[in-house]
Image (cartoon, rainbow, N blue to C red):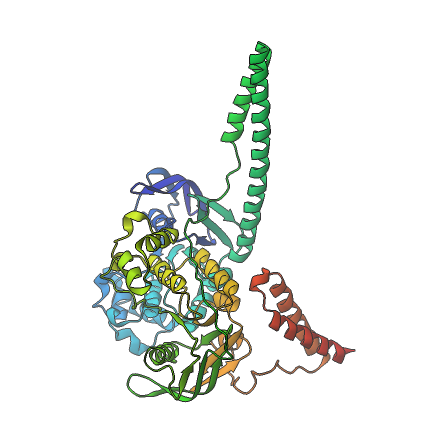
Length: 569
């Protein structure tokens, strides 16, 4: 069967910045492709070229005559704001079918988790996650055979994300999607294309395996480049020696050999193995340290909504220095409300009766809406206000964080989401807090940024309280997990307890009384199955880089394996 779409050596630039050169890409029926790249690498521009809304500067695109392509953008068309949800979906159908085929629109909205009551909601009143699902429905209603997705998981809560995963797994259409969610990419794709260094690095495997293959490729490229440079230096020394001897001894044969060797050297330089430059951006944090037995303590507290409705109750919640705690719960459960209460108490009354801080606690806060940044201020003035210090230090810090000198007075309000995130983390790094509260810190950063942030947190031994819908980020960072569920804040021993609550195939059960110890197993087959499961968890964790491993959980798994093995014998 011929390909649905093919790119032939396409190149494109944004102004004076080259985004990519001589790209080749083939999309076949049934392909499930993840497109990965750092912010600003040109991924969204490439999607615009693939769907025909933009044209490449060079190269061409071949499209199958039977191609029916739809695109799910990052943001919904503002022209739909005053439509109801059902009207916005039916509008995609041919005018003569919008009434007779309305049942199809209703069925599709039901399949995507919308209630009949929500059909009448205005588009402008929908949440970000609801708008994402509506855009997906608008793509599906015409039954395309290829769909392009531009970061479809942005603004989705975990429940919607898992539903979306299941839908994509059963989707018959081919798709190419841009995403920074590593677990999502692993779940729904079987091919990965990295857009980096203005070129493609394609791999016929999901993201995590492809990332390992890319690292192996980079390591081999570095080794080859080092050997090539060593050979070139040796030949340059030999050519120089021959040229000198040719002059000293007036020997034309030696001079001719020297020139021949110099030509060979130039050819070798032209053919040197390419080594990746990386993204060229840096995302880092520095934190101070504190000597204390606890950083934060909350006892016997109801957390109230703005309308004084009780969201949940806290019996006892303590965070000690060095703890990395993930705060889990559904959208609306009260995660951000709790964080707001903590920050309000920190800023107004650190010695309060209910929320207490260690006197050495120095808080750094990343709010998901980044409302603490004044959009009317420039970059330099923002750092002056929030960090202080001489201007030459502030300018150097901005340049190191990837902001060029010409943008020093650029207003915060015109920055992209990724640029604002880098500015927020720069402020944290310069202030060196010893306790970080990170509310959805991965929303606006690419995969490389997430991995840099993970590494920085782990290397600094920071005390951290995080909320995130990015399961891989939570798994890599957190060592403790607290869940808001059934009107209470409770500690759980593994995040899968929360994830399983939202699994489309999960049977909802009350885990509140079972989460402090591993599930009991009985019978030889059950014991063997549990041992296999534990060994797989242990093997997977040991395969990760040492800084991402969980020694405490490894110890717990080994102990349970030993106990179960003893029962078998």
